[in-house]
Amino acid sequence: MPKSKVRKKTVATATATRTTQAESASLRAKVAAPSGPVFLSIMLGLFLVGLLWLIVFYLWGDGIAFMRDLGNWNFGIAFALLIAGLIMTMRWR
Image (cartoon, rainbow, N blue to C red; front, side, top):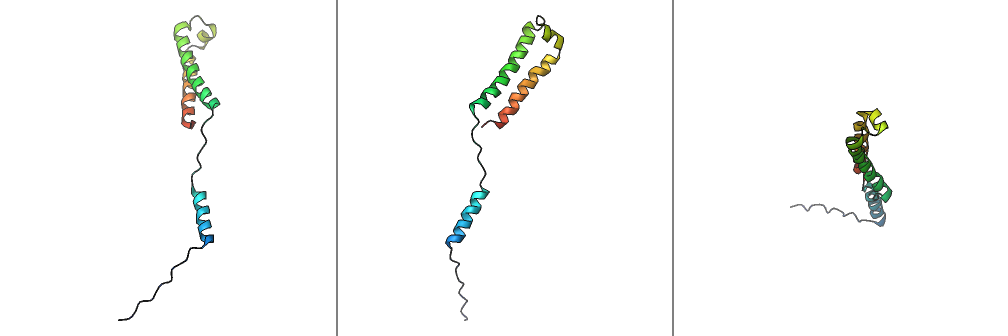
């Protein structure tokens, strides 16, 4: 029976190891830093201002001249503030 050929094993060199590490480092996802306290305070502030706008409009809207002039736009303003805060939650880390 004939003898099979012996295959040579490839020896890992230091250059190949460095290339592999460099490639794996470039493939890693960048981790975003946590959001700062200013971002959080603006986000919560938008929620709070939107909620307060609705409450004030329902309770005292007829007594406040500019709110009376805005009419149903008060709902749009309040919901725009709330949605802006909601959109900010998607970027919060």
